[in-house]
Length: 246
Image (cartoon, rainbow, N blue to C red; front, top):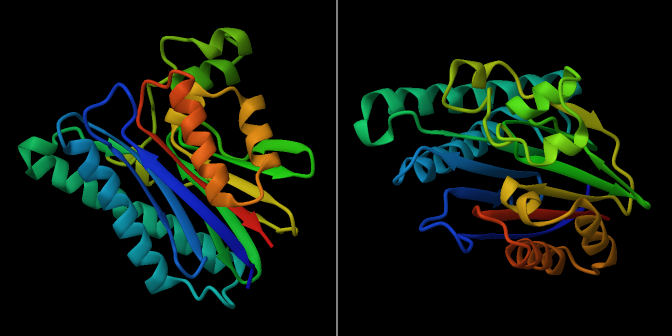
């Protein structure tokens, strides 16, 4: 079993009336989730809460965290997220107050001595290994699609009008079509950040790296990332989980 220390923090921020983000760190260190809801009123909160609860429950039912093979874990992950997606869509259609609600989801899962990462939407996962910071997830945003197509530049993407417009998230048919989950071989000293876009909205990637690199404790790193993003002008809810692999 991979030994992981974690720290997490989620705040409403300076510009929102309610917190539509949710995060969960399994007390046994087996899985970690971040969800960023959308939909207005309390619908975004409902969607992110449903995603975290359903995915957590399904993972515990379907994954043997001590011994399952890669194929079994990947299948269980995509099934868990697909079921959360289906339930969010159903509630959205039945409850008028939840119409068009949705949420992102991302995860780090420790199983069978390996780590698995992935997600749907634009909540990101970064890994710091040595001095190299790498983004492990792909944003499912229109801006990223334009960037991938070569239509816009990296510089233009930073402030593009479609930056926060998603083409895949939970609450849509496309949300249940897979998480892009990948298996990673962990190394002692690896550090991971799972975050909603409220973190990167107010924090340059260089600053994120320096905070995680300098921290002696994952909770201190999470606290500092959220504080720095808030002070940096983030206009969204701000949520992150920081993981230290022992």
